[in-house]
Amino acid sequence: MCFVAFALGPSNAAPSRHRQPATPEESTMAAAQNHLLTVEDGIALVTLNRPEALNSMNRALRLELLELWPSLDMRKDVKVIVITGAGDKAFSTGADLKERSTRSTEEMVHDRHYLTSRTASALSSITKPVIAAIKGYCMAGGYEMVLQCDISICSENAIFSLPEVTHGFFPGGGACQRLPRLVGYQKARELIFTGRRWDAKEALECGLVNKVVPLDKVMDEAMAMARKIASYPSVGVIQAKRALNQSMETGLAAGLRYDVEAWVGCMHSDEWKEKLAGFVRKERKS
Image 1 (cartoon, rainbow, N blue to C red):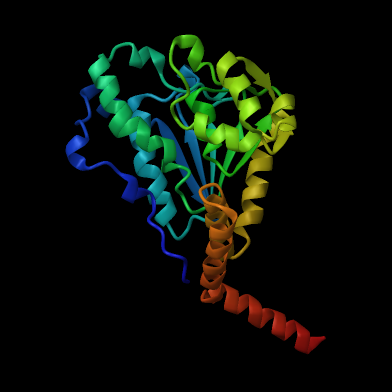
Image 2 (image 1 turned 30 degrees about the horizontal axis):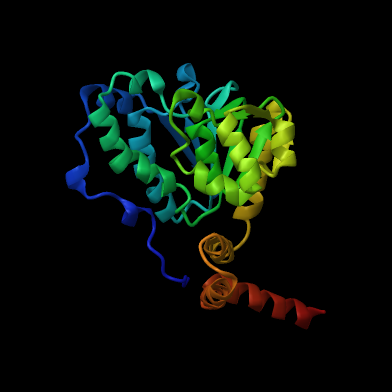
């Protein structure tokens, strides 16, 4: 299989000299697994596993995910990734503010430069499709994670919010860049400046999610969509995602030139050649 060459997640990693060693508390948290992973039939299911804290993201979980995303992207047995939160109360409520309150300003600034800034693009850099399965609360950095996903499916009781301005800062994990591209600048300004909540119905109307389903059907719907995508040749899906991502970064003429090269990459793949041979065989039989 031949793709247009692009650096994957690891190329975005900060130099190791900037990485602070894990504290004893973080080592204990890592041992307790802040995330769960299962891989079956080409689908990786990643569960944010801190239900007691509404799946908020502490430093240990961020470090785990920074290692996980590029590793899943490299695995040949993974074609689609589904992300959800443990339990039915929340996908994620963003940063663990309780943990953050124990850290010094210097430590938080360091993390912003060398940890949080990397998480703002680590998931979106994955070449494989990523589906968010959202139940309950999805707020702040939790929703910024969803904005990095390709498809979002939420429960009827889902509640969204970007409340950072009410706490004296702003959504610095990508929402100020991605949300206007999704819903337009006026709507993005309203949601970010007011910090208000919006429900599943409004999210669907604004194009902030793809589907709204009953709470007990969220995972079924997400996994059904993942299985459908996983049933297709990977090369076409991956190149389509790369071309779509490119459309967010460049003008029309440059984007169309990129499409040509991405399309040519598909033509060199064994998967495409097998599909083409299949079409020929069907024509001969008919």
